[in-house]
Image 1: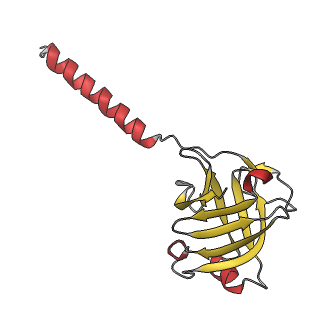
Image 2: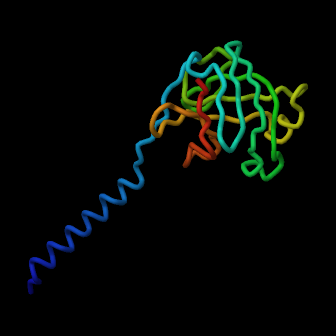
Length: 158
């Protein structure tokens, strides 16, 4: 028994079109570019989540980070300072701040003596990942391995 060839072709085309649409929706044009120190040093702001200034001395100052929803509302508005470093591609820190000279994962470690509330509510620090949807590259919270860009994008000023 054979069916109508036009109907069969229509169903095949419809299935192929559906698969293409699903693949396009899943595979956006984002990437996680590798940054080096000169790419990172400076002030990065987010329209919704505050500001982070990275120093060339591997120190940072974070102002008005709105990250409470990512930490069970323990820290609604966080400001503090500490040290930053690139992490390995697997997310591991090195023995010193300069162990990795580039990367797409950045660790912010709050100083427990000067940033007690930031240190306490985040468990010591947060991780950011580089993210590029268009141009230029941005930074966002790295909290979920299945969705490495959480929250609003931080972009570098200037």
